[in-house]
Length: 122
Ligand SMILES: [Zn+2]
Image (cartoon, rainbow, N blue to C red; front, side, top):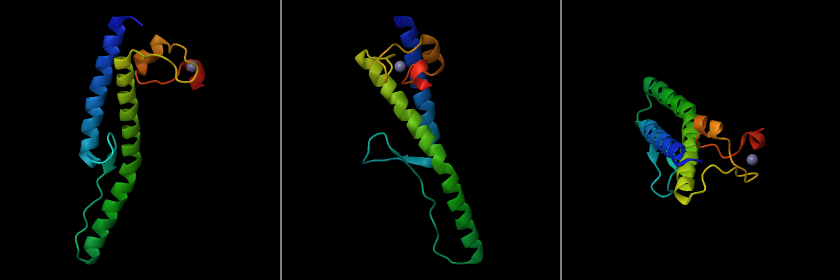
């Protein structure tokens, strides 16, 4: 892969990383113990047992449940991006993890964090 394209891809990955991290910050906290892991903030419940408060709590739980899969997919994406950046640093970027062949450049332009070549993805 030529250096120019690699630099472009690196820039793309870094931009994506920043935007995903910002998105995650909106509803998750960085896990202090596990590096690169994020926890969806669980809503704070207030003590009272009034019916209105209970309803509000139910809404908050519902919100938490819908946020979880979003958080997981963002987190996964972020991990893949970090892996790709790591590979660039080590000079191993662009190799398919399944067949060790080169991942198509056209594919990497669209999915810079792709791990597999088109053949292995199928
Ligand atoms: Zn492959």
